[in-house]
Image 1 (cartoon, rainbow, N blue to C red):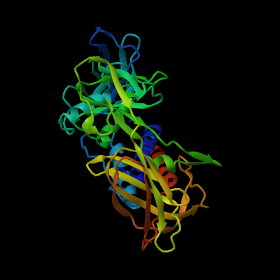
Image 2: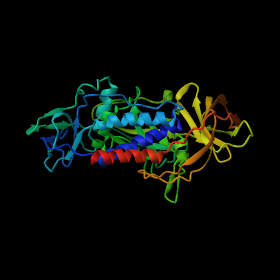
Image 3: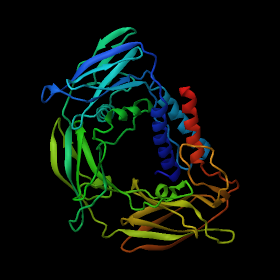
Image 4: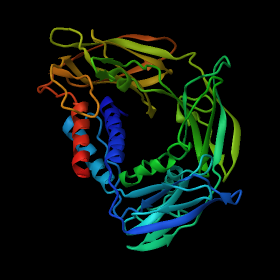
Length: 434
């Protein structure tokens, strides 16, 4: 189950990627890699393709994640651990010319994967993910991915051929057949996705602008995702049901978005992965007419109020998460309102574990920004409360009256200073680049 803190951690990691890209410096010139990129299906040059020379990691570590209920120190430790992984990443990105030729200079000695990105062809991230999900050892060169050895003051040759990727296209519709617009459609591994180790995460750079990661439905509900490696997949739609955010006097507030998880729907029309249809793609296959139906009929809401056990006042900060007792991967959540009330929407019938987390009495902070990359609104905690759990059943109607009173914690939990964390990351990157 992802808590608001874990979603913030994901946001911080994403922002760190941007900071890393912006602050990275190329190693002193020492070697050159030249070559040609050819499209295997047409035997024609891949014109103006993105070429990525990505250093084969010598020390691969798993992504570090903060556990549920982690405090700021634990979250920061996870962020720093992943930062160390990113800092061990080396790559050079260049582009082919009109003849499919490329010339990468200033490449530090070592062994490199050679990737090329062209819309419709297998994308670097998809190739690497497919290899790792198939059981490849990330400590060793990945099977099927070409490599080149770079030596100082030498020119190395790397002619590569790229394969046409598989593609899935179709549409997303409501239960009445009308199109669902602006929905995110993803293709995920059917046997469970494994997160890329930090040293591999920057491979996404080679896939930017080339598709194959996510699609957004158009005005007719249509989508197309291309550049996929062969394999078994699920098609799922991510529908953001609460998108409120604000900015006042330059300070952004994303608390409602962070607390409310998107609603996930698997093709053909399932809210749980157990009801998803497996799509098997072969090399270069184009699968058309894949349809996902979103039927909100029969979904319910769960509402109530979170209050102090001492004087019964409503607690103004925190989150409520419902996790399916039979499917830990399905959950719905909402943030507390100023009066302590909450409403979790679009909940399918079932048995759920309700958990109240990070509950606190807060007041707007008077602290000034410390110069972070982003300026987030923040609150000061006056009093923290213990987490609470209970079980409930959602059947044929909305569930109301879930009123829970919490005991004050012995200590006051400090709110996560997102702006300060991002500022520290930005500062470390600036220092590293000097």
